[in-house]
Length: 96
Image (cartoon, rainbow, N blue to C red; front, side, top):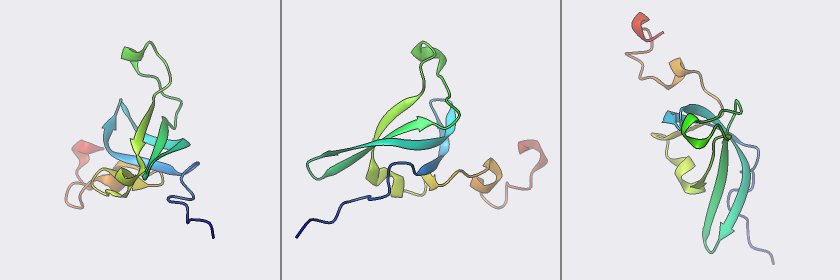
């Protein structure tokens, strides 16, 4: 009997960072890596974003996939900024 795979739909999933990460908020999982009991996800900036301090290379990084379950850090899918803000600040004009 085969073991159940952790995070079976990880590759191709889309995520929104609650805070800017390397200058970007929207990411897509492009790869996964299993190391022992841990699963890592490679995230790439969705807009093909580059970071000025990385020689304008595309922004990619590896993250423990469990961190994607932390809703204070990551939201599933690509969310608009207004959807990420607390309800009392979403209607403020100075944030638009």
